[in-house]
Length: 293
Image (cartoon, rainbow, N blue to C red; front, side, top):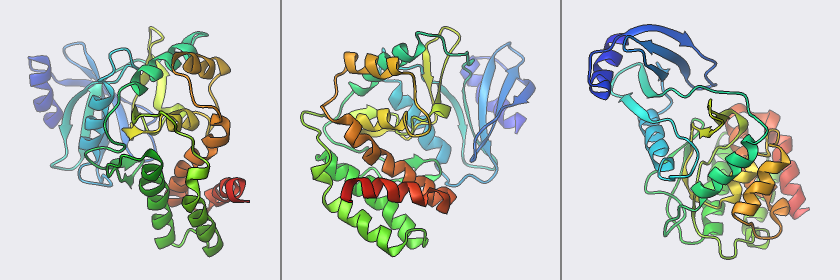
């Protein structure tokens, strides 16, 4: 693989470079990751997979990062440098960003940068291509109605996957269908335009760089309801309150966000049910019961 990396990085840096050494990092449940030290003194971040879940998996991730980079005052986005998806292992090489511990002002700074990202809009909800949430295909068929997009392209697609794999009991399936049928009773998106969102904003997908500037990565990007990004930051833990206060100051929300956030997170809980199995079923059922009794 080092030879392929050398060939791909030469035009990036305008000189011949070799991998001097690599340091494996934690990675995730899908890919392996390493930091590569190059002979020109630069470091790059490598994501690779000998058996990627989809042929275009890394290509789509690179496209997502480039989309997020549109926000001039938005979060820092690692720049995609090189891609190999025509042979095994497949890999994506990114700009290396050194992680730092979050300081006191990081949450508010993160919130303001996220608000700037969310100000980027489009005529439709969705995206001009499909991508992935984890390793699950994420459908992005464009729709002018944000509630219908969330219902059909988010909840119902995950419902269908869970139904086909036998992970959704019949009673839960029926109740989820009732919730989808009534969803307009629960989502107030008055005056909300399609917002460019990260799409998978749990705590493992952001950190402060050495200058305390927010850096986000591993996107599941699309134009959606911006509250979905905020809700995801509360699903597995929660940022400090000054994050949410600073976001509301920069980009006010419609009243009632607290009543809606679990509905947005139902998409991610269903995805975790599909990816990891029945341990997430009770959380799915709890959210459904909250809305339909």
